[in-house]
Image (cartoon, rainbow over the protein chains, first blue to last red):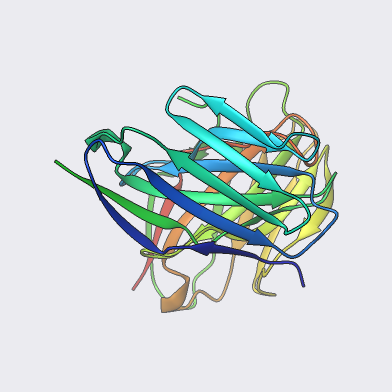
Length: 111
Length: 113
């Protein structure tokens, strides 16, 4: 069946450094790729998303890139801050079909 | 606040029992999704409804069932509960049935003793 692989499972970076989280999806018909951030004890919240007709999207310190040929997409966080510490989930969706979430990456930003 | 409400916040029950979790989507959202999140685990998709109809099913156990009512609220029924069913259950809603942002509720923490 469809799946989304996410790496790494944990990531520690120094404050101010960049963080990159990568996802690979299996369903080539997927066309919507959101990223969610879940802080400890809280609900997941969308931080950025990208659709298949776009290769890159930026929002301040956050960017997402998509390589449809390789079926990869990545989250890039620049100038990391302690408040970026959380679990990040990628997901892939196809039309009216369900989301498939990745397994999550626990990001720790060290002050 | 996402606009999605879930009740109850916490639920403690015994093995073998049955519980019902309730979700009210954001105003205007027609899709409701249910997810299970065990301790330090990812989001396991259970089931999706769109405008009252089941749209997609994930790894939902036969002991679990759900429905979406005409007023668009949804209920997740868990029966013959086992210790392993202890988890955080999230409901999410979105405008459409697929490629849209999902807005998550605060979750219901279920503890099975």
